[in-house]
Amino acid sequence: MMKFIKVLPVIFIFLSLYANAASDVLALEALPAFSKNDRVLILAPHPDDEAIGTAGVIQKALAAGAQVKVVLLTYGENNEFSFIVYEKRLVFRKKEFIRLGEVRRQESLAAMEYLGMDPSDVLSLGYPDFGTMEIFQKYWTDVKPFRSMLSRVVMVPYETAYAPGSPYMGESILRDLKRIVYEYKPSKIFVSHPADINRDHRSLYLFTKVALWDLAMKIPTPALYPYIIHVVRWPFPRGDRPDLALDVPDQLALSAVVWRTLPLTSQEVLHKRNAIAFYQSQIKGAPQYLVAFARQNEIFGDYPEVHLEKQMASFVTWRQAPTGDEDLSSKDRGRPDHIHAIEYARQGDYLLIRMRLRHVIDRDLGLSVSLFGYSKEKAFASMPKLSLRVGLDGLSVYDKRKRIAHKDIQLTVKDKELLFRVPLSVMGNPDRVMTTAKTWVYDLTQDETAWRILSFQ
Image (cartoon, rainbow, N blue to C red; front, side):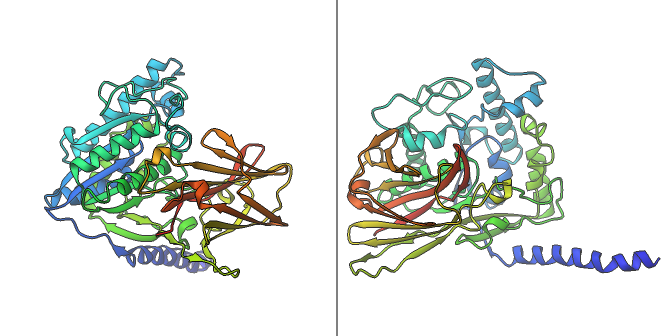
């Protein structure tokens, strides 16, 4: 009896922590209600993201009489581990990967129909699973198309796709997204998050932002609500826990993301869980993962743009983008945390980037900064897409896949602090810049920060 009495305070503390976490989620600003006038567009990187991220959104929108359309960026054909578990055999031939991609699309159609959608409102683009970020960074204009890792094809191979035969190029993805958004004219768009650790999730966010910037003067600007899926050790605990709420991931709790919550009824949670059950090709490989998203709410949030005013004085006022709690792949994976902080400023016609590291650059540790400019005056395909790479031998600069001269780009290294001075002209005199940073050891990524958008407007 005495042992039980001693344990009681621990139990109360544990329950109190859960209650506090739930109240924190409920304290978030609510997602705006849907109406019959809404035109909702769900953009999903893979078949299943639309259900685990937004099944509650779909139910709420349909119940309000709104129109809903789902667009799948890929068919998810490169998830070999899940397919081995699902098929109970090794998968080698490219036709098998393409067939399994079609399996995933059919699972999505069934799940969306269960939630009340018409299958004709689910569009599949068919771009390469685990390849769309590589396309965004390197495959534009006069290069050969990207070659998919496992299916080993260079164009959309599915007859059921939105534009079969489209080459695996940045222009193709951007064209499809712009056409869909322009024709549908959504009032609300739900898309994957720029801090998601999955590269396809981050790329779909970036492609979507470019599409919306290109269409800014042609359609009413829709509200954009990114949803988060892949974060290390989140949701916690895993498994079927409809009694719990989805909290904000610890890695992003102190970030600049403005979060909103969508509370779900017990019936909506049940329907979400039933919809997730249609994705058997994925559930068998991770039975406790997908169902962990069927909880009392869904959360959405985005980073504000970092506005940089033009400064001429020698004394620079910096805008900080904290990274200590936003790294996508460091401490939580047992890797060292190298990036401490990143700050930005505009001095005249130069972008200044100041990075503080926890360790000095050495023969093992390297660093890179991506700078992708956007200008409303130029096609995004023709804009420079720079990667500034720093190692023990100094600075090297790449535009997409090509190494370029960098005499106008200056780098100053002082112990653990790096200062980049980049002419705006080298980036194509952009209105905005999409940027991220990462460190690596022996080509293995250590830190990788969320994508942020710098604005010079």
